[in-house]
Amino acid sequence: MIRISNLVKHFGDVEAVRGVSLDVPQGAFLVLVGPSGCGKSTMLRMLAGLETPSGGTIAFDGALVSDGERHWTVEAAKRNAGLVFQSYALWPHMTVAGNVDWPLKVAKWGTEQRRDRVQQVLDLLAIGDLAERFPNEISGGQQQRVAIARMIAPQPGILLFDEPLSNLDAKLRVEMRSELLKIHRATGATSVYVTHDQVEAMTMASHVAVMNHGLVEQFGSPETLVAEPATAFVATFLGTPPNNLIAVEPDDGGARFAGCRLPTRRTVDRPVSFMYRAEDLKLAEAANGETLALEFAEASPIAGRYMVTGTLGETRLTAVVDSPPRLLPGDTVHFRVPGEPAAVFAQSGERLAQDHPADHPEDRSVRGWAL
Image 1 (tube, rainbow, N blue to C red):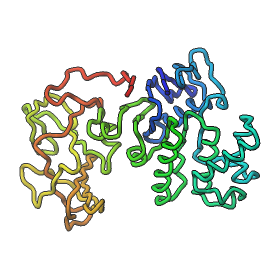
Image 2 (image 1 turned 45 degrees about the horizontal axis):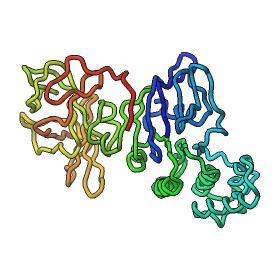
Image 3 (image 1 turned 90 degrees about the vertical axis):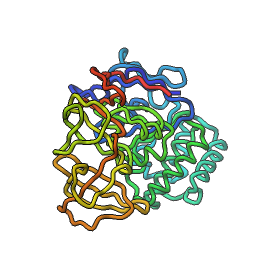
Image 4 (image 1 turned 135 degrees about the vertical axis):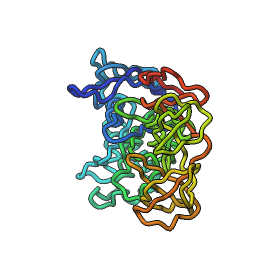
């Protein structure tokens, strides 16, 4: 449904998007996730027709809508795509029904058709009783529903969401995630959703594109990204808690960190990073040759268990355990790692083959992804 080919966007000397290629199938719920400034909102604005690419192309359902080389783009209103902004952007002088009716009027729907469609989408969003109110007379969560109703009223084939839940409180965000997925299923549209919240990404998406510095680091299903992170950035950005990375030095064929030789059958001949999942780390009562001594930082409850975190310089390790240690911040906590790391990454961030390290890991400038 959406084909993005070698997409580039410059703002002066800043390259916000750096040659991204993605194929998104019909009916997918794609989430663009990454830290602030990674290029995800710029990507969405180019999909919406609000920005013209500096290079590359965008096609919707086989039809070209943007061509960066020719500096050509189809205007936003003619793309068969709807957009919900972070700020909702409701017209304050129009009622709820008037806001939802406006794009239908612009599209030259008939009066009776518009009236029926407005009522239909307001009922779908469970805000039919708010039809005659004005935006300043309803809550933030209700305003968000109005913005979504306005977007889906003209029945676009593509739905675009720019961090739509960031202004809501935590409880309402959880509720609205479920509502958005219901709307996605009810409309059958292809959705693209931008967020910096990896919990939103992993709970809502059928497909996830993890962005960093204008690149897509990895594209795939949430399950694949958690199970097989392709880069060190993905490994530490996704997950609750995220994976642990330990920068190790070669030590006579093995690996050493902070004076401790880490168990592995792998031959280590250069500085690399070992990845350990939080649930695979254990706590030890005292130091020995097989434990890592770190400074205790905190213990936080999570789903009936506890996340215990320790630090040593720039290294931060978190273990998920059944009960927290009786320690105070600044005390020493001892971690025991498993017999093998779950993954190994080169200093450049590329994941290395577990059985034989590559002498020249693949350049991550190869960034064409499809499912």
